[in-house]
Length: 250
Image 1 (cartoon, helix red, strand yellow):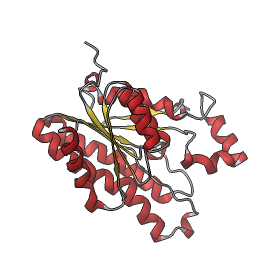
Image 2: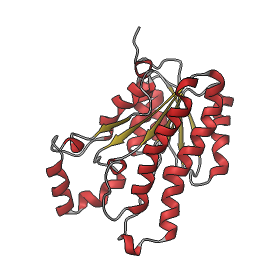
Image 3: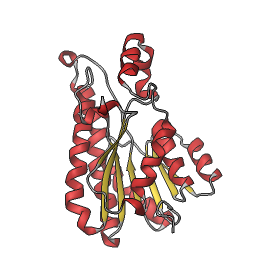
Image 4: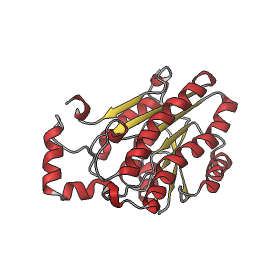
């Protein structure tokens, strides 16, 4: 009777070893889902929290900038759990430099991890979900899906691309049982924003723009993910849900 209950579902979360990905995985587990963590580094802390919530956890290691390993992540999940119901494309990296100095290597690294892998992992997951006519894909977008930012050209391009890709996949798959949506976090206290928070002027300016008056904490994102992963969002398609403390409203 609870439309937010994820009991019996299996959710794969990329970049789940720390930060937002870790919190997303734990939130989905607390709602009842078994979890597959995908990360380049050990996700033991996340797995322990998932198991403490009474759910099972499969840890997979992968470099998401390499496309050839992505189908194997889905295959390993199916071999272990027999199903994949929810995919959260969270993994991402950032590079900062003035646009005039930005290197091709920094461009390619960010685009491959933040955008290219989102498409090809979604494709691999959808091949299973389409057979079952059931699945939820949640991409992690950004405030820079709506705005330009400064000194992060490849990150802005990748997150703008994630927003567009979310809508494209929703258009193709909504009638075939797969919901594709995105969450756009505002300014959250994570490793990716450490440099901004350490810059006294930038930190002050950012806080002045946020109506809530604070940086987001990773736990602030969990409710949005549970909603989009659940039956409660069955008629939500191609939507980008901002969780931003009011940033876009100002």
